[in-house]
Image 1 (tube, helix red, strand yellow):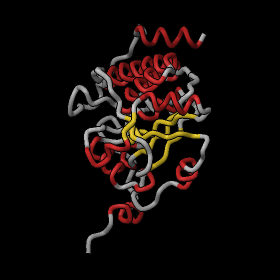
Image 2 (cartoon, one colour; image 1 turned 180 degrees about the horizontal axis):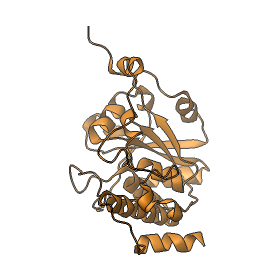
Image 3 (cartoon, rainbow, N blue to C red; image 1 turned 90 degrees about the vertical axis):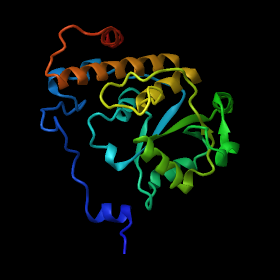
Length: 239
């Protein structure tokens, strides 16, 4: 008899992610190779909106995962591991908290949930009611995100906010299916900017660029001697 994927995962825990470069000495703070540590460029920001990341288990140990960058910049960020048969109890409690107004960030291209789709005006409306808008990002590959979306009944009644942007991805560490497929932190930065948290969005964008450049240089065993423009802006904000 086939074994349920989630039961199998609990019976046979996955090992920490191993890949080329997994034995490189990494900074315990930023998890980047110490050759180009990201910690000097970490800047915190405040925003009216919050983020809840519903993260696929396979993403947690990937050093190229960008979802964690959101939490580095925005202290209100919450991260939950997604398991199909065992939803996170804290997430369920937060979903029941009327002080929050959660929106699932997902494409609006399927007719079966068209009635749930809203635009950025809905975010402004909840702000006017003194509720905290929360962007729920399904953190994983596109295939994983679709599975999370379809297999999480506790999300079925939440409004869906599709990110409309002309932005092309700048992510250099994994090959996207399309240049329009943004990585997790790029989606977050765009959401912040479009919802009114422009400064926080700019800081997160610069922090992503610093991460992108630092990691790419470390892959080539190259130490960055001259900070990039994004790095310089972050250093100035830290002063």
